Amino acid sequence: NGYYTEAPSAPAPARLESSLDEKDLRFDLYEAVVTGMQYTGLGLHVKGCAHDAVGTVTCVVSVDTGSLTFTPYSEREQRTTLIAVMAALNTKGKLVSDQITRLTIAVPEGQIAEVAHGFTKLRVRGVVPSTAKSVRVVVRDVSGRIGTADVPVDEVRQLAVGNVGAQPRP
Image 1 (spheres, rainbow, N blue to C red):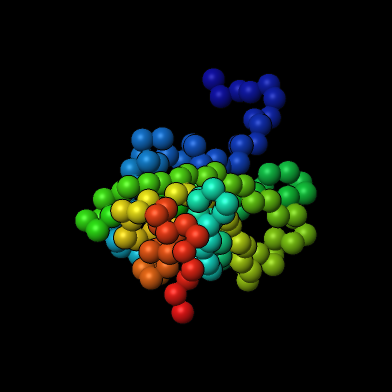
Image 2 (tube, one colour; image 1 turned 120 degrees about the vertical axis):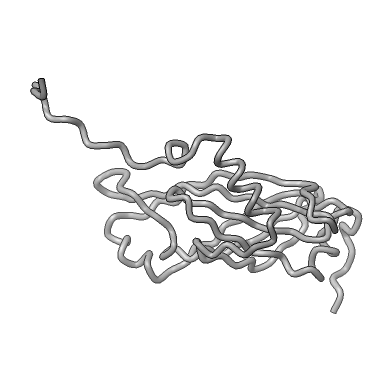
């Protein structure tokens, strides 16, 4: 007992799927969307949103890379996996639309020290129905930390599907 003929292999890097089962992950993300509470586990800011040609909304989100958890992937780089959700809510705070995106960020080993003081921009996409009164972006990293950012209310009206092509108000 206790004798191994070869050295145990190094543990695999932590993965998002192993930190929570899918049901728990969905619950965490759903709660972050609908509670209205600001989550600050990850530094997150919406920089701006715009329609594309078919009415899908793309928001540029700035994420503080110092708040992300990177794990060694190879001798030359470290990675983190993110789940990003763009969600639209109605006046009662009910979810009317959401789009989930899985992203991986890789950083060369020689640049990992710079990550603590930087940021990265993510593009998240979704549909903003005409019934939407608020839009929230939620990002969760491999460690389970969550950050939220809300699109300003005056911009949500411009992003709603019924307002595609409408000119922004001054």
